[in-house]
Image (cartoon, rainbow, N blue to C red):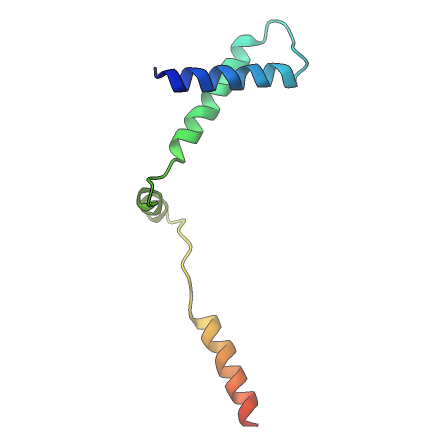
Length: 84
């Protein structure tokens, strides 16, 4: 385990504990929640240029595409109105 991960998880678990009013006996629960949150954050990290995130989104079928058609339709409508 890296020092950064331990430090992040520790700080997050402490924050969770404080936000719940510092209850006794919930340390393990807070630690496990912080670990899950850290793992989720690790899964969403992208490379500096974002290429790995783009590939992941493509693979998951979740990459939104930019469509030119609506822009062309708006321009065609403007041209048609100008011609009238």
